[in-house]
Image (cartoon, rainbow, N blue to C red):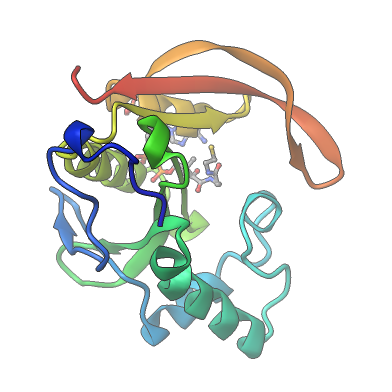
Length: 192
Ligand SMILES: CC(C)(COP(=O)(O)OP(=O)(O)OC[C@H]1O[C@@H](n2cnc3c(N)ncnc32)[C@H](O)[C@@H]1OP(=O)(O)O)[C@@H](O)C(=O)NCCC(=O)NCCS
C-alpha cells in the first residue's frame, strides 16, 4: 500500500486489515464467498461490468474470482473494497471502494454500486456516509473524490447528500465500455 513518505503528516496510519464499519442501514465488511449471489445478480447490469471488474456473464468461476480480487485489494495496495450489507439481515446489497493508491498525495477515490433489486432504499448514501466518516479520521487523507457521469443522478445525489461538492466537468475523462465519457468530479475535504 502507498503510505505517506513523511510520517510527520500522519495522525493515524491506514490499517492493513479490513475494518467492519457500521452505518445506520448498512454494515460494511470484507467480501465473503456467500456474496456470490449478489455479484451474479449484477453481471447483466448495463453499467456495473463496464466500470468495475464484475464479469459480464454469470459464470460461477468468474464470480468467485471477482470476490477473491476484492479480498486481495488491500494487500495489493489498491485500497479497501467493502461489501455493503444490510445492517439487519447481513445480506450483501452492493460494493463500495476507498481507493488509496494516492494516499501519499493526501487523497483517496471512492466508487460504489448497489444491485438493481436493492436500489432507492438509501444504501448507497449510507455506505458513502459511513466510509466518508471513517476515511476522514485519517489525517493522512485530506481529500476524498469521486467521478460520476452527468446522467447518473442517483450517484451524484448520494454524493451531494454526503457533503461532496461538484467541482466541474472532466471532458472525456474515463473509458466506459468503448467510449471516453465526461465525468463530474466531486470532492469532500476531510477537514470539512
Ligand atoms: C448509483 C447507485 C449506486 C445508487 O444507489 P442507491 O442505493 O439506489 O442510492 P440511494 O437509495 O442511496 O439514493 C441516493 C439518492 O439518489 C436518488 N436516486 C437514486 N437512484 C436514482 C435514480 N435512478 N434517478 C434519480 N434519483 C435517484 C435517491 O432518491 C436519493 O436521493 P435523495 O438523497 O435526494 O433522497 C445505483 O443506482 C447503482 O449502483 N448504479 C449502477 C452503478 C453506478 O452508477 N455506480 C456509481 C458510479 S459513479
